Length: 404
Length: 73
Image 1 (cartoon, each protein chain N blue to C red):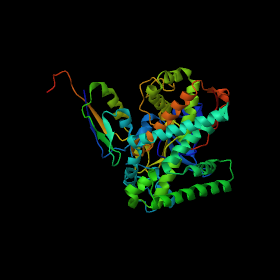
Image 2: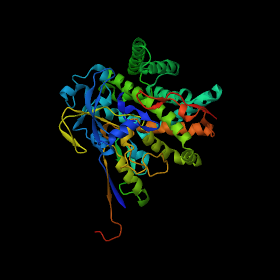
Image 3: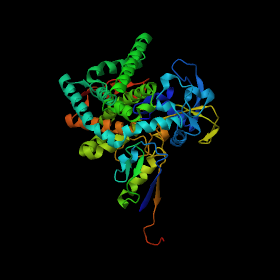
Image 4: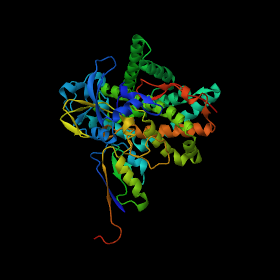
């Protein structure tokens, strides 16, 4: 999933596992369309470009020279430099341009290599098994979101950040509250203050006595090159990228497999060997990250025959790009046996999701452990009654009642 | 036969190539960028290497097709 924040634009609406009919109709008008959208919840609408084709999205995301991520400074799009960067933005990689982006990213990437992530595998497996034990204790039907998808993404994130076991529940609950639109503003602000203060204390603690975890390692290797605000921002970014995306992929992925028994059969025929291609096709088919940070053109650029003027913004639709018929004629079909498609579920270009290997490992572990324990897993309600999660950072499910 | 080249300078260290073809691509301990362990991989890996190049988010992998019929010099 891209290392980028998400926005509550209309294009985040979905239909079933795919993009909404509305956005598909708009695609018929062109690869790039002009739309009026609010840049933030409650803000007045502004015109923006939406890139809806695979080629257009890849070109925009792949061109970090002519498209800037520092959207908050669009009035004076200054590439590089962070003189005017508000403190709360520090460390959020997806809001940086070159060369500052590379400076930060290169310090983080050693922690996310395929080899480092392999070390987290046994912990992740143990977490999944504990969740399955809890599901069995809770009895049938059980909510897979509440008892499996959400606690796995939460526990792995806490392992990574070094949040002690005793603190995890409250930390994760408060994080959830701050995202829930139906909670009062005061309550959300208090929850936000709690998580941000918690992370601030964690960074301070790690500065003094760095442990073996991700933040501790970062401090040991590069402590002098980060200030506390940047470290805090990096923690915030991990929280933002590591919870809802993973939760959404686990829960929607399970639903997609249950709804496509022929595809599930391929997984179950040889789980260890087939799981990676199942994960890859699910990543494409579900594309839970709606869109990366909007790009701002720093000069006039032509994309898919359309002139984007300097200063104009482009939102890239990941689900539309990943279902562009240019990839395959039957691109709307969930087919785990197809030749893997060059999808961009984790983004494209220099902002490609830094946690892609971690995400894949979590998904692989979650699907394998679930069907190992419950080979006869089934929906406990009709599929039409499963509530999908709208208006959230990533696409997902509110609940997924299952039985075994 | 294929010949592979990588550009660690522009590599985004996503690790996608290492996941896809661990026999050909590794990642540096220092910054996670690509390390080519086999610049001339066996023919049976050619398709996977091409996929890795296509999927590289930074365009840091180049694959050159080599003639194998012996007519080349």
